[in-house]
Image 1 (cartoon, rainbow, N blue to C red):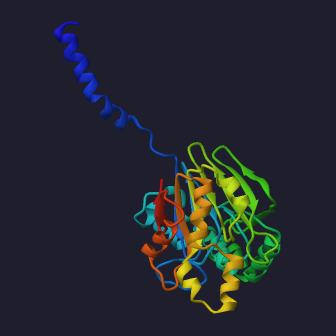
Image 2 (cartoon, rainbow, N blue to C red; image 1 turned 90 degrees about the horizontal axis):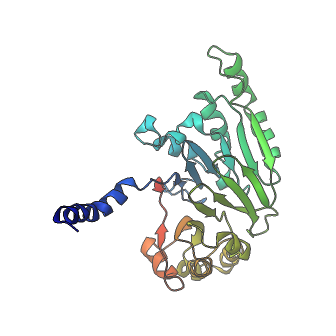
Image 3 (cartoon, one colour; image 1 turned 90 degrees about the vertical axis):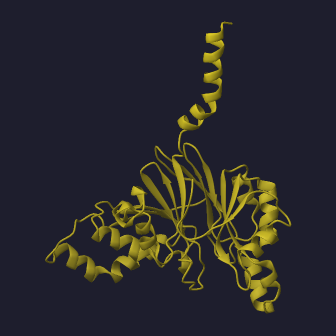
Length: 307
């Protein structure tokens, strides 16, 4: 090989890593934690709600209090950079179950985007009882809806409408960007509580909803890119009165239990949400989980973007 060819090859070889880095495609999928809280009114953690954003489309999971304003904070209108979370673009939602801390944002998600010019019905995929809830919300706000339709500044006649599909386990939704599967979980005595598995062009994201340790969840979470799972601080639970220990044991998942679940499911990333800290803190949660799991874990926080 001539000196010139050797020199050219050396330059190509040395710059190859830079070329690979520069041409690596950004992720098409983002997980946005709109609210990581519980029924406890923590000012730093809004009500339970997350968004999966694929390209220019957002899919909301659960409608905790404050979700519309949290989404707005991530949009270009308020200094963010996620166009899919512009309020008028919020039109598709999946409900894990009908507990109030997952649904009291329903009216907000229905009406606020409509006021801000969403011109398509809100599409909701949720358990049995979702249609009944939707009908009563429309009845509760009929005066507001009529005023906006026929008052001084009339709105469009589509964005206030609701299209509900009550779901069971299995494939519940598919479009060009996502496939959504629902799977049953155990959350106290709720007859219908679900987790979701989202398959996008470049990610598999599994969302637990509220649940006790679930073999069904483990099956759907096997080797997922992200497992988003609820959790409570085990040491604090140990100090609870018997009634509350029984309640939380039958409704939620402890740090130690979650570590065991993740060790078997082997997600690339475990993210905590719907967090019951009680007397604990973030490091306490991580320390407890590390007793049964040595993979990568993130304690979720409001407005965290994982991509």
